Length: 328
Image (cartoon, rainbow, N blue to C red; front, side):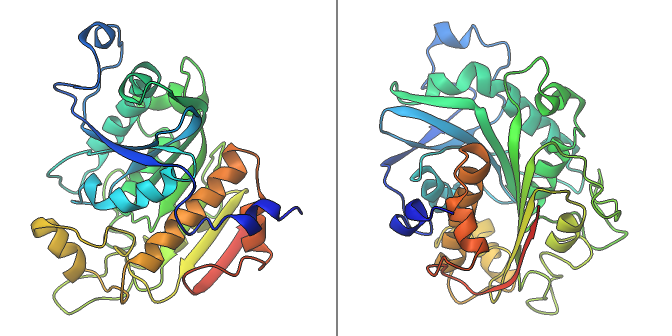
């Protein structure tokens, strides 16, 4: 293997691109002119947070789905990390309030997918072009469940997007960041994604699953685990087919990839409901870096970063890993 690129650039630190963060409101769509907006056959229905390189170029696209009752803004440092390595990250706010059923979130994520081909270019800097032939889908916590559900065509509105027909969007990579499918085995939230049949996910794409070592541990007697055993990362990975990668981070928790400061009641809850590590930065750096390595391998045909980690040659990983598995 050639390790030149992985030895010269640390994917766990910020990359070489300057990044700007855009807020796109579906009501005003202030960065879209009325004339171009009228041409869109798939209107934008949810507000977006977009992290994009500012330099001229064409970049792969990642759609990132937030966790249960969290705000997309809580992931601003993570998505800027990813964008700084040459990716356009689109993070919709799927809802403000939600019950146990995630069906509407799946439909909303499908609608965002359809909007990309019509609307994404119009809200980006003029010299930045999205390469929608290189697209990835990711989600954290319940957003991870939604990402898997969308990839598995649970939403009829997204079947064209997931199988590549009648759509310009076909996801080539799927990433579940500490995905959760309910409260416990037998207590999955609708629609259930896990089937408990090994390698049953029929996905025409590579999959990355990242788990938190502390996610299945209660913080205290008042709150259940944030990523309960039986419906968490381990179960999602067990149902993946090759190619798939699986990493479990020791000594870090379910919300440790969020921003250092998450404000408001929900921001405070992200600290006190889950068992967490000492600081968030190392987990966030790892999650950002491993997502970059995975997308470079499966969107850009550059496996050097992922191979360096697989071969134990990457010494700059900012966390200790308790599980590293590759299904090839």
